[in-house]
Length: 66
Image: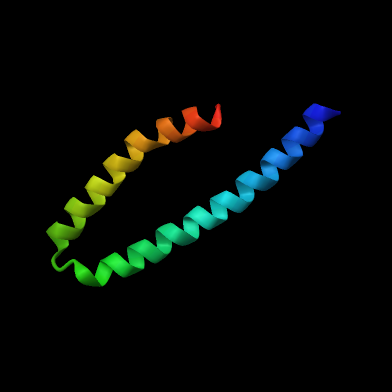
C-alpha cells in the first residue's frame, strides 16, 4: 500500500515540476532569443545549452535517486 501511494505521489510531483520547469525553460528561451543576433550565434548558444543539459541530467537524476 505504501508503494502504491508513493508511486502516486511521485507521479504527481513529477508532473508538477515537469510543467514548472518547462515553463521556466520557455520563458528563458523567449527572453534570450531577441538578444542573440545571427543564426550561427543561436546555433552555438543552443549547442552550449544542450551540452549543459546533457551533463546536468545525470546529476539531477542522481540527486533524485533514479
